[in-house]
Amino acid sequence: MKLLNKLWELYERIVIFFLKIVTGGKADQKLIDKLLPFAKFCLVGVLSAIVSLGCYYIVVSINDELYILGYSIGFVLSVLNSYFWNSNFVFHKTDEKLKTITKTMMSYSFTFVLGNIILYTLIEILKVSAFIAPLINIMITTPMNFILSKFWSYKRKEE
View (tube, rainbow, N blue to C red):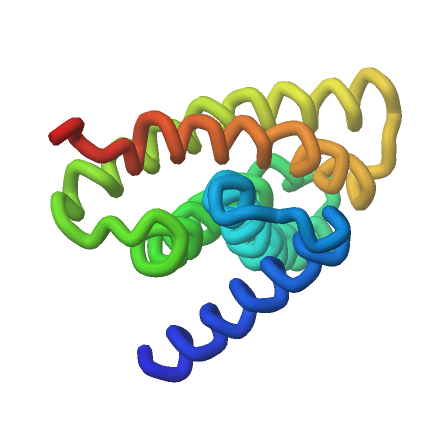
């Protein structure tokens, strides 16, 4: 876990460095505090996308008619992956684990259903390639997952 913490700190420094470059050195702490969680969530999203797409493409390479099964397996594994990273490195919430993972599964389930509808529409109706469709799907569902995670799954009680 120490190595992961060091890698995460390095990622944070890189994001802050680029924020300062993009803003011409005018990124104050308030702006950094607003944008850093989203940048972290995006990295988790990339890691989860790799897990999800990896599962999806393995199943589809065996039988391209099983794209829903591949998407489903990838979904479950990517949510568990997201939960680990978001709990420990993005939102730093390690208490109430059962409640948090339940909310995480529920919020991701919403985008899972939406993602299945998007996949079906893209592949069956619009005839988009089964290899391209999940990439479009992820670009739509990732921002929704961030909003649900930040404001519901990992929301902290007001003190």
